[in-house]
Length: 317
Figure 1 (cartoon, rainbow, N blue to C red):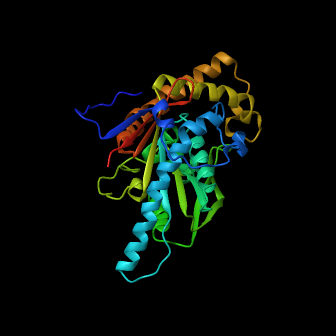
Figure 2: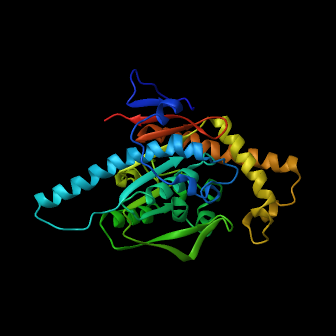
């Protein structure tokens, strides 16, 4: 794991090894054997039934506890105010570095939560859609800082989340294409008042997306529960480079891909490019903007060398 720039004499988290975590009682019984794992895992990231049973099933039960109290609080408040209204969506935020496996965690949680007996409507968005378009990033001279706080349309993202928590019936979010490496101008993702909304992105626990001191509202202010997916930097670098190599043999082959320009690079040059991108963009973003938010999460999922989870830390209450 990464070393924090400061240390506490006591921790606000309770820590569990994988062995301790998987033994927690009262796991919900879900038909996980029927799940198509290939539809949930990210490129070059292994996902097994054992990982779901040992790590995600206890996490789902923990979230069930939080959801039960969330629903109860809504009912009691409505009685107190002598009012009847729809409950606003429960928002789960998922943060972490590039290549750590946030997308897999988000998709697994979406799938498992939707399988609960309550038949919850669980939606998922990534903050990629709220990146500024490439033309605007180029205009501002920050295309090489895509993913840094200043590369996002913070006002639009905060407005979307405010709409979610206001109980707005129909919600629209922008769509990002990894193939074109840009926000798609004529595409939107439509939601109709989900029970749970999962928001995944490297930036979601940062205290500001535009670094303006006057801003006092942050993305995480809208979260009911937050997760930080963590791993050692040497593993993150390795996973990023391996993914880059795999993409050269797959997505980069598409002539319309933004990265098609790299499809013919010899392996040595490709590795040099991937390491340069990591050193000059992803690593500084991790150290300056992403990692410092880790202790703001409610749950920290720590991954080992093989991409499987080895520890879970839960914020004490």
